[in-house]
Each structure stands twice: as structure tokens, then as C-alpha cells.
Amino acid sequence: MPRNEDEVRKSVREGYAQVARTSGSCCGPTKGCCGTSAPETVSRTIGYSDEELAALPEGADLGLGCGNPVALASLRPGETVLDLGSGAGIDCFLAAQKVGPTGRVIGVDMTPEMIEKARQNADKVLAPNVQFRLGEIEHLPVSDNSVDAVISNCVINLSPDKPQVFRDTFRVLKPGGRLMVSDIVLTAPLPPALLESVAGYVGCISGASLRADYLSMMVAAGFEDVRVVAEDRFPVEATASDPTLQALVRESGLSVDELRRAAAGVLSIRVSAAKPAK
Image (cartoon, rainbow, N blue to C red; front, top):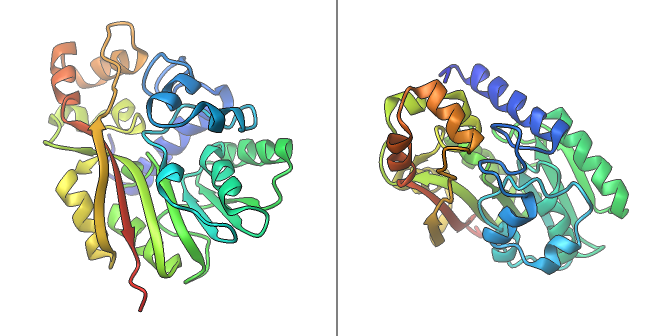
């Protein structure tokens, strides 16, 4: 995987533009981000209820998440919520139901195709309190101290400058504002060959940070009360027929067994934090 930040963003943008165009996998012609399951099956597995999924406009759930940050964010009516890497809008639409008509939800994504898809989905459900903005999560198109809560779902791992993501998130939050993140982290370093894989990076694995480093970045940005709410082994598909695994085998030169062992150190983690009130 290219280490130049612009090249990393280009590869990620191209990968997720393909997802938006096909509503398929970020790594291959399937219906899940990193597996063969349909989006709704993936979403149920990572914490979305049948009621939540039924309330979404068709096409909002692409099965790209690794948790349900809205369920853990304790959103209240009238609040302003920001979603980092909003994709087709799944978490924005669920957050909008929590904050109600007096609240506001802003989704930011760097992929034009995703923004277009999300706006089309918003039109389907007539969601005037949901807005989608094109931008990078390292440089959010949002004013200082203007957001009550920030959520993000399996996106920060894709950034080549994660400390800057947390610094800019801290900037836009109001004093006392909350952060709830579902993301991918590692319990051990990945094999060097896997770190160079484009499929591994776009598939939310090769760009992930070590768990301790990830939490330290949040503290360094100024957040307090940084807490791991839950964590699980990330359900990376590990069958010979999985297109993500096939792409990783081709690109990395590692065997299927070596990739399976590496995947054992990949965690789905839910973290909460807060900006100090003063």
C-alpha cells in the first residue's frame, strides 16, 4: 500500500466509489464490505436491530460498518450530531430519529459518489434535518464548537493521519460534547506484506492502529474519560471463496492460513470519550 497520504486517500476513495456505484463489497463483487453476507445480515451481526434496519431508506445500508455507534451514543432530541465517513447515510438516518425534527445531523464523506448516494437516500425519506457534506475527516467542513456528539463507524482506521482526525473532531465538538466510535484496531502488528496490500487497506485491516496507540491518540487530542465500551474479534471472512481473502492472497503473497492468523489479531472496538466541559 502506498505510504504517501494522498495516494492512500486516492486508493480509499476509489475503493468506496466502487462500493457506492455497485452497492457491493469494497474488495470484490459481493454484498458485504469484507465478506459474502448481504448488508442487512452484516448489520444485524454488528448490533443493528431489525427495527432500525426496517426504518432505513433502501440503499442506506451497505454493510460497511463494524458496530452501531448510534445505539451507544445516548443522543437526545434537539442535538447536533456529526458522522465521520457517513457513506450512504445509515447512521445519519438513525441519528436523525434520535434527535428529532429540532435536531440536526451532518454526514461528512470524502467520496463524491457516496455523498450523491446519501443525498438520494435522504430525498427518499424526506429528511430535512440530515445534511451531507463532501470533505475529509482530517479537515472537517464544520465550525468550531458546534456539535453535541460525533459518531463514526469503521472509518477512522482508513485515515493516514488518525491523530489529526481526533484533533479536528475535538475542535468541532462543543465543550462537554461526546464522541462514540466503532472502529477496527489491532492486538499485534500485521505482517509487512499485508501492510502493503491495497485490498487490506480499503478492507479496513491494513490501516488499523494498535489498540493502545488508538486510545492514546484520543487522549493526546484532548479527550477525557476515554473508555472501551465493548470489543470483539472482527468477523473477517476466512473461507477460500471469499473475494477479500482472495485479493489479499494475490497482493500479499501470504498463504490463507497466514492471513487467518493475522486476522485473529483484528478487533472491532467501541470507544466513548468526551471533550472537557471547560
